[in-house]
Image (tube, rainbow over all chains, first blue to last red):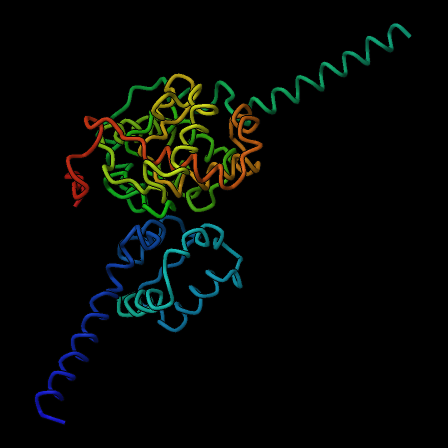
Length: 109
Length: 239
């Protein structure tokens, strides 16, 4: 394999990786009404929910958040205030839920 | 016997009036917070502040989402918006996602309803609302227009303008998928504050009829003076 080819393959891989990282900006997803409008309930900073019934999310573990998101979306978890959230869960897919969870985990509680 | 029959007819009348008042309540009972908000003098500045809560889902522009999860609010009549807000607050329209935001604890009292609706009335409409799949010239579009003319014009008007005095919503320019969902809920009895006349009118609509008529409505051209200059317009009141 020529050096040039290897380099161009590497470049393609890199740009693909960057492309998907760019496409899945957890912070932007979290604030996007097209992706559920998370901030409406949980606050722009993810720690000022509009009602005390809603959880603060900033600094929560990513794995825990992702599992709750998946369970609320599937209906497996349907207690508490999930009725309010279920209606918007079709707006995010698994990768987006992961990106949002990762972003929230990076925030200071 | 005479007494008994009088009593019986009295009971029938009482029962009937309860039934009637219940159905009036479900669609559009007078009085209450709705009337109160309708008659208050709105404070636009406070309306802008209240709207910030709404903007997290309905967008700062009030345009909602094309996938229909959140409807466009821009362009809707004051009376319609106040009625729907008051109905959601009173649990006369089930909307678990919006319910917490409609509560007085979140947005305030009847004055806040008057204020926020006044603010929404300043927003220009989305020039690029979500549309159904059938363009003008297709058989489905034509059939949808026919269904509209035969069933909907009387209340929603010849171009989907509705009637602000009678609380009939403006439907031109609304997202296809939002209207489809609401139409289905109204037809199937899930929208508790639906107008009973409409429920009756659309009872026989098949799913395809419903898609065709809503497709047509989603493609009605809204008067340019009510639209934002471009689909990239941003509301300067919010960053």
